[in-house]
Length: 269
Image (cartoon, rainbow, N blue to C red; front, top):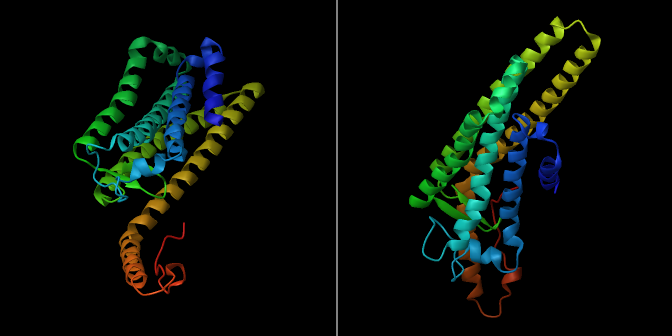
């Protein structure tokens, strides 16, 4: 809802808010709105099973196949806008750095030629990546989230996905660091107290934003590392649990719900 309100706000604001670097935030939120729609699709009646499961109830792996249209659509809605949002975030930090280092140069990034570079990278790169993943059948269904995504069963593919995010994070962190250093330097050189307060506000905003972003990124990577370390243990435990239930269900007059079978190891997240 907040991202949707941000998009609506940008649509009704003046033209000055639709220039770089501000317009990058509009595209980031627009991409996140589409991603949220992709996450909400499994909540429609019958959609979750159709997305992540075959007609016989088994989990979809190494998609797409002939009957995996919903799985591919779910993956597209979540993956492509998410990748575009990450790229637009890097573009925003880059344009912000240029604006702070040379305020007069911000006008250059409002020209069509300059904006075209941002659009080509942000929109074409995810489409190319999406097409490659479809061609190599690296999309898997996940029964817990109800969507199809990359690398649920292939750690190599998932690692490559994280490498891209890491590269984007490092690039954005570098540009944000340059912006902070530039603002701090200009603040020290500024003699006007009113302008110094403006610099302080910008430094505070970028600093708080950077700390929050770093915290969320660390949490995300911690979850992925936790998943990598215990993935095989959870799969083996689940297999043993299913075999145990299958064996117990064959016994006469046995209520499976009250059997002695249990998952020895499972995710605590």
